[in-house]
Image 1 (cartoon, rainbow over the protein chains, first blue to last red):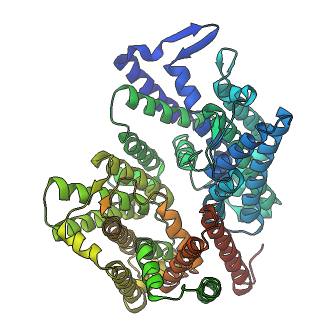
Image 2 (image 1 turned 45 degrees about the vertical axis):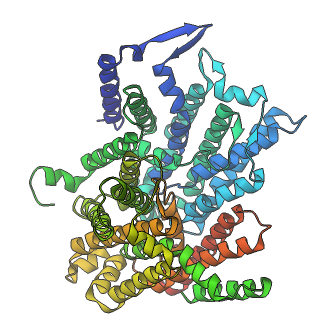
Image 3 (image 1 turned 180 degrees about the vertical axis):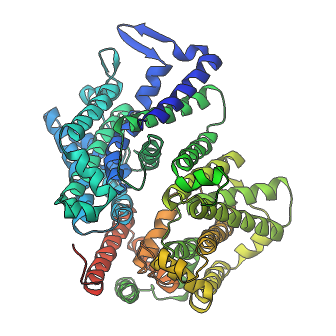
Length: 321
Length: 306
């Protein structure tokens, strides 16, 4: 049974509920060659979380965790906003600079976890604590606004009638899936996650694998940072990407990858992110107070992990664990 | 912990030389007062981290207790002591639920307390989105003296140090964190100890929520946002390892004071922007975890392959 089956069923259930409860949910209108509607909205709004969660999937598959993604979003966003405001700077240079920061910060996490062998939670906690400070230092504590249409097009632009963000997420998911499955990378990642001792005996350089996945996670967070900044046309070091690490971890868990490492599913993660956004949108359209989304998300995650947990299975069947 | 104490002394010396008037009773009372709720939360977190777990729900529980108690005062008109008791029982019950899920259903602590954080924060918002001013006589009385919060902090510290250092419960916590399997074979009631540490953390978080109410004279659903990170940072700076089994409450309290002195020094400096607090905390955290790695590498078994 594929790992992405359960999040797909969950997403289907939410959509089915909406089909009866909110008939307009499935309406897609075409205006000026562009598609609009609730479904498109769900895809678009889930994009930053989905991007971060895709990178996080690989990190979690190695038995790690990356708490610093929100801080990386803030830094990458601030760097992009500062760059775009410099007259005469080539646009590609701005993108490259922001992404380079993100990859470097991710690689820094990878060095700490892989080479200095610091526990992933503490290693990435360093950047989580310091990261927003660095972003504020770069932006001098200001919210940096910009008007450049090229960067803004990431957030509000359309490609093939769909928001650019959707193409970005799909492209990232596809590249990561190809990278993981066409090369031996997924094998290495899963092996390190299952048992780093066993992978050492088989000759896998676990340190390099860890460095790579944290670098990828940084890159994904950087792309999400570009999206967040482009959508608001402003880089706010304090709030950009706040709490996104939690949503991303939830998306990965709902997507069927185990927090203890090993087998992973990138498509499951995307579905997980979509499912959470669909749930949030549903709660909003039904007029339920927004504060309940937190509780619903928490129950969902507990339910999913209880289903995955072996001893809980015994518990439900009335046998001792 | 020795390194933490030395760091604290160094920071104090530098601060005293740089800012005349730093070494005064007011500054030190304020240091304890401003960091009382962080300190109390960090003491609870120490129990969890010593047992090899983690509790991300601390900040959200502070927020819930803060808003829940002030709403009860405004709308139910209950007397202060009953509200305090009720808040603390809720904190403990919350911790027990988390501990039960972690221990009986073998779910990862990270995930359970992450969900707990969402539940507590969501409930806090459900109680009231707006801040509520506290008018309860007990809280008013407690807020009158500058010594109330430092005393609460020190009393929690004394109780925790006693429980960890002088009771069998403390030994069980260290044994569980050192190696859960060996602890089980030695006859440590592993499941009960595991639930108990989360109950202690819930208790401390609720107490910290009450301290927050006394400190700000108001209840707020967003109180304690991202507080768990400061608490974890303080515990790690205090010399505990996140793998469990190593660390002390005194270390964590020193860690809290280190963070507090940095904050005070940056306030004294005046020209430095607030973000330097975050950066310094991060750098300190990095310094301490790297230090732990160095010590561990020289101290642990020679059979280690890496």
